[in-house]
Figure 1 (cartoon, one colour):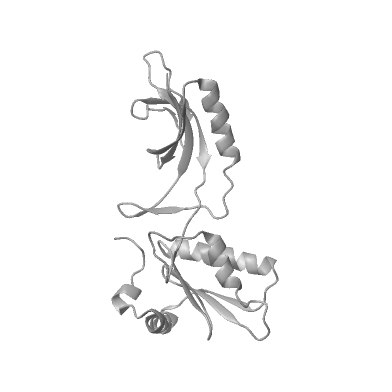
Figure 2 (figure 1 turned 30 degrees about the vertical axis):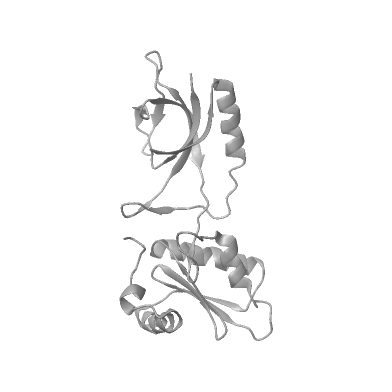
Length: 218
């Protein structure tokens, strides 16, 4: 018998995290992986056949046998249902799991070099404690802009909600660190959008059609 600890994405098999021959070993590694699941900034959306909310789960599975009994669970509305097999596997246990979000930062390869929020915070904090240094942070649809006369950083998020969540997270960090040189401007108004489009065009040379895209949906 083969047991697996797997990761599912919105209920669909994603990858195998551990594979072994005994139930006990599978559960030992299942609990170890859950304990190590410490995430700085969890992913909330994926861009697969369109941008959609995402839920990850870690599961212990075994190859289905005729004598296996499926789990009885409740959905988010409280309705009881019998859990279907996952392909040829029966799920023995499962729990929510978090995956670290990574970012497309302008100037870096969006596929080969996607840092996590630590790099965004690092760029936010450049010069933040210097005298007479003020930086603005603003959401322009799916883009978070960090800028002043000396700096321009653009983080391209999957959609507006993702960009707003990043903005609010960075604002909380700045307040906790008591940094007053960072001005969090929220989401740009229609009038401000036009000004920001010009700034993005000046700094990136992107076309206005590309700049006006509101998500990373293909």
